[in-house]
Length: 413
Ligand SMILES: Cc1ncc(COP(=O)(O)O)c(C=O)c1O
Image (cartoon, rainbow, N blue to C red; front, side, top):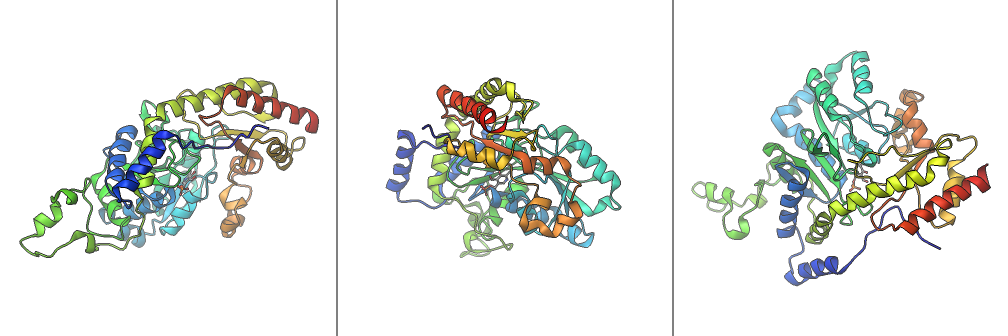
């Protein structure tokens, strides 16, 4: 029986070689490879800077904490109680967790049912209805499944209300929106390189930005708030700018052990960066294959579109997976359908759940949001996804199509 995974990672000759190079160098903690990845990834996304961290969750936390330190914002946020962050209820839980853990308050607006992302219309009508829009400081859209949010309109709205915009692009490496990559469309973007994502490294994350101060702050926050924050570290060449500039005052000054703010340890390892670089070199192929696979599956499953909402197809989207939403839940039960698919070797994942109403960790918000986010609740309950990754062959795609059709015919009609 074929095994169709949600994501797949092939350790080929190139991957083995780069790992061996790191082992042979005997330098495994963050160093040259991480720096190389930062330069290449910033080029890929189209931002001036990219700072590597150990996960996408860390990237979100580091970015949000950096925003607080930036521009004296922390004082403003605390004094004026500007803690609210407008975000999506339908996403992997990390987005909300990072908001809460960095001292902000998530406020959810509903999604577009076809692309699963928050819409400028919903953000606008929310801001128009609230008593005090000055309690808000950030809009944090998530490009879910690779679908880009309408960033032009979101940025415009943010300008009107004096809010910052930051993007969670953890699921959208390589998606282009009006000619620019997601992750480059706001103050900063974040990415995850977790195993099933389009560029993968096992675990790792990045923050991308054009803002030097934000990049510097994130460099500090990811390393326990240490003074080191140069975009490119020159210490190995004996050219540490901080050491040189402080020489006259304090001969013994070492910026690695002077801590200017209270931070975390979010540093990555050389292995992760080396693996991510191998994937980055293949990213055009990865994006194209995934995009073609979505198109192929859609064509094959078209006749089921009265029962299953097939993913909307756009040429510029770098798809994380193949999302399906059951249109007739009374006829087709998600649990049963997923069970039947798994039995046939097709892995699936539920569509995250609507965070404030369907995730136990957020039950303190359930009463406030019950029934108010119908699209997210519907997709959270009736949506699921399967793989569309680059290693699937035509016979795998045909197998998926045939199996779904058979299951629907035999078990649900
Ligand atoms: C939308 C989104 N945000 C954040 C994250 C967190 O990334 P990580 O798992 O690398 O911490 C993920 C991970 O899947 C994600 O999908």
